[in-house]
Image (cartoon, rainbow, N blue to C red; front, side):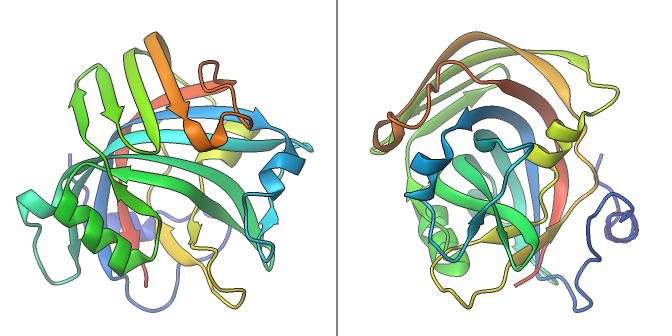
Length: 235
């Protein structure tokens, strides 16, 4: 069910800071989401993240996450979504950073299904989008690209009634950093809190060639499923 924009904007008690005062620019939906979280060595991770971004930690632990989902209804404010551009599958590899005390995420890799969408997203956001062929069904996700290979088969299990502090730290993130400019400010996003479910993997083959020494991708420390969120984003 699509929520009214005003309902999303007025649901703010879960946020660590207020939403921006100026108007949002992008609307998008992140649907049918699989989270796979991995604890990693901070020294190795430090080599992969620009120095002006501080590595964020939870109880002294450093983490990266693979997030596979379907991006839906992407469009600027006062326009409407165009199906062949605004709906596509995506997989990203992200880690957790802070800048001037503001926590967010930094993307090590983003794979997207459609060529035109990938080119536009890279230009509009400055994020490391790359085209990869992705196939998705209700319970599977397959990708074979230049940077990674993914084969996932899963089942959604019970809803997580009480989200732990670690789960909140890993999922409730409202700033995106490009990492290209030491003077950059964050790209702010907003959505209602994630509705998280346990997930069981029937198959999990996951490989990022550039990060084999960083992560054992076949064995996530934590994993979640979510039906998704409606997202507002600011320039």
